[in-house]
Length: 343
Ligand code: ASP
Image (cartoon, rainbow, N blue to C red; front, side, top):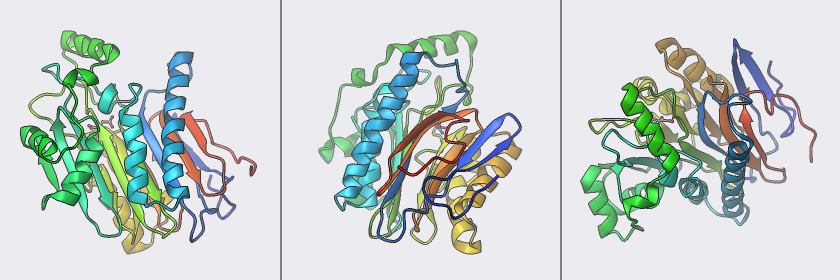
């Protein structure tokens, strides 16, 4: 079911089989008002699968990130600054699979991927497999602003980070015991399943000037090998922003998002055929990626301030805020599935 043109407090929601879809129109974010959506990953997140402490920790992390990002936008900051800020907060939070809470690779290392894109200039920066940068999203921004490249990887990206005075940290900073145990379990079972451990973080924002931006950061997939890189730092796959269309950050089984060119595909549908963001996001996530066997979700925000999400997993850590409205946080698929009264 879809509800149109009814303001920020109204939900557009649909269901497909056992999977929940939730996407809403933030039509309260008219010209001149800011809006943002963030995510902390998707997965087999159903009621009862998280301890109360885990549930609380994830909501608190989302809350801190959406508030920090809202502060940037409310003080007239840019969408680019807002998405970087949101992702930095989530990278510092061990509850999420990015920065400090990143999963471990086969070699027992945290190899971090991140990307950021400015929808106004179409400038973008990305890093893959970095190991010593405290906030990989800020390194991605440095690549965008201080190099003539878009993407750096591995030792070279670490070297660029050091040379550009991006904050460094001992790799131990990223060590998280629960993630380490997940790796031990994966090594025992030989598992390399991109659907099991998700928790990538991302943000999309639209500022008062009407510009959009997107950022994504992740540790990737537990037990990843051979320098595997997922969709998150691939511009056009896990991250994309274009003022003429929308801004997108994805999370899920990265190989499928890469093959579909998911984030760019959503933007292209909005820009070229005038699809509304709900239809564009659903078409890519629920049809194209699902048909190939992939799972996951996206958050999207359009130039007009319409923002929301689409996902095929039972849950998605997510939050949204818009100028003049109370921010909302959700974890399970059935949350925010009905209209909510205006604050
Ligand atoms: N998309 C990420 C990757 O494939 C994983 C995730 O979103 O959890 O690296």
